Amino acid sequence: MLQRPRRNRQSAVIRDMVEETRLSVKDMLFPLFVQAGSGKKTPIVSMPGINRYSVDLLLKEIDECANLGIRSFALFPQVEESLKDSIASESHRKGSLYLDAIHAVSSRFPEISLLTDVAMDPYSSDGHDGIVKDGQILNDETLPVLAKMAIAQAQAGSRLIGPSDMMDGRVGYLREALDGAGFSNVGIMAYTAKYASAFYGPFRDALESAPKFGDKKSYQMNPANRREALIELELDEAEGADFLMVKPALAYLDIIALLRENSHLPIAAYNVSGEYAMIKAAAQNGWLDGEKAMLESLLSIKRAGAQVILTYFAKEFAQLTKA
Ligand code: PBG
Image 1 (cartoon, rainbow, N blue to C red):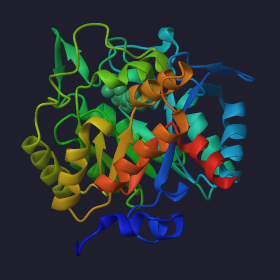
Image 2: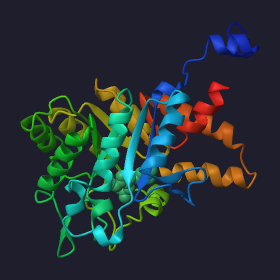
Image 3: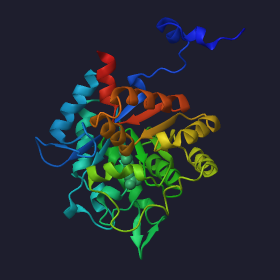
Image 4: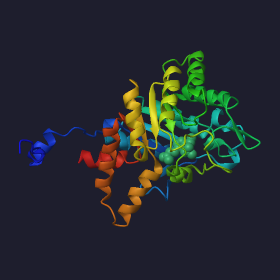
């Protein structure tokens, strides 16, 4: 036998030498949830280890994560039901919980990167990512709301926005709105291929943001579709996106690889709440080694071609690798 692949697997040092993919905390972006009040830390039942924080404790949590080497975060707000309406007014109201939180985080930690979320659903009394009329999600009527939100976030200190809504044309619309308001340095991480997925369940628990009727299939992509992701890629590139994102990650590794092969922009992948919950639940039952399953799945996302991984495992990964 001339070729014996096992020769390169025979010791730890040789295995390390030929290792093709290595995870670093620098690859990761840690999503966090903020809620009103002070001194509040509320566990998310379907996401063991993840909490919703009031702003004071959020700052503490970010400080702790920063000391572990995490430099990138995303932030999502839980909005009180009484503040929700059909046009998401709360999403761009000065003095809102979310805008105040962005301001607090970006002024206290100027060196970190904070991805701020542009979408109506946390503020919408319909629980949808667009304005609803007669059961339809209106596209072009939603764009100005998203633009107000993006500009308000930039004014509050955001340097990177993440439109997670999937309305057509929103990347270009937001790019133009930001530029027009003097924010040409604010980047856009586009949710390029965001699928209508069952894996968002625990996130909607965390924010109480589930749609009040129907589903999101008229705007999020059909999980059966691969070529359609290339249409979204071409549009987001042409409209000025700075990052392209695939979401979820684990059931869509082929889509991550596809985007990686077809664009020169950095590719991000969102290892979503349900993907986190599955591993945690199995580990709690003693059915899986949670730590190994975490590392293997994060590795697969990077190997598929993601340069940035949004993951609820970021802190655990940082703790594990710092030790
Ligand atoms: C909605 C939004 C969702 C997530 C991020 N932004 C859920 C949805 O589309 O209903 C899900 C993230 C996760 O599951 O971790 N704008």
